[in-house]
Figure 1: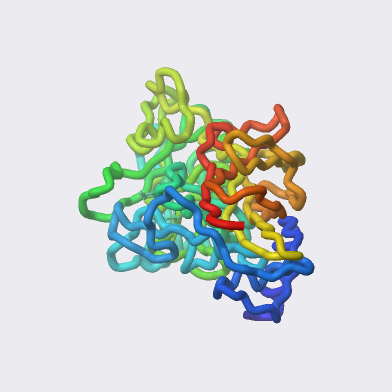
Figure 2: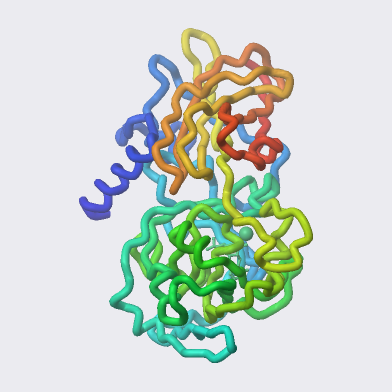
Length: 391
Ligand SMILES: Nc1nc2c(c(=O)[nH]1)N[C@H]1C(S)=C(S)[C@@H](COP(=O)(O)O)O[C@H]1N2
Ligand SMILES: [Mo]
């Protein structure tokens, strides 16, 4: 790794408020490199990690299945201050290309006006519009406990602001919707995924979010499994709108019906009402959310101490009051070490806690701010349990 990128990683780590200092020389007792990147608990001896219970039996970090059923879940337990950017070969996957990769120079997009007439744009011709698009987190709307919550990742992106491409089809203030469509790999889905990727936005939504067509992830050409050579990223929205292998951008009627993908994801993106038209859909944004990613056991002065490390992400502004509880009948206390500075990526938080008795615990987070929308978090979606067999 070059000097520059290491420095940048550190900057990202600090900017994201990861309080524990990097202690590079320390060896992780259970082989988890994430631990080595965290400061040890002062005066305590590390005993090992406690696994979460009642979650899917997924091969974390391994790419499995093909086409629409291709998946890879990130092993969040290995998250540390030094891995706040997910390496491209670990970034989660939902749907794999499963065919010969297409070189960027050969990729084309059809820009369709309201009358349906198309202009073909070659990706190769967009070179001069490429720029750095920032660090953004992507989370699948179906990031459930069955996937051990591993359908979430963060990367540094390069690409073309979508507004730049839209200006080539229509003036900025055109009414109606904008449909971004992508190819899908061939073959059926045993998991029940619907074919045909597309989402309809308003221009205002896309500009407000700073949507862009990505061509590179973490400084490398975008891998075919992540939608390379060209995919949409809508910062702050769920992954299901981040269409991969984008091949068409069309202006559609203000009353256009929703796409199949919008209907498939309606519940998971908290839609309500009739949903007859695409414009009946609310922005599929990710609310503020938080979950533990690792429970570490430490011993200090003969007593068991747990260090719970977790992440906080989503929402529109940094959260000041993150609260944690350890059992379903327990009360919430403020998280001691949490400093969220940006919503673009996740923030690592941690809490030291002395469990009173050995039993089954359920960790749940809460945001103590009525001005912050946290529907998924509040529903208990990200609650994670563990068994403590002895103190
Ligand atoms: N063409 C196409 N784009 C797609 C999908 C798809 O199945 N086909 N899945 C979407 C979903 S549900 C998610 S969560 C993200 C996942 O992006 P990733 O595999 O790069 O993590 O891609 C989105 N874009
Ligand atoms: Mo998804």
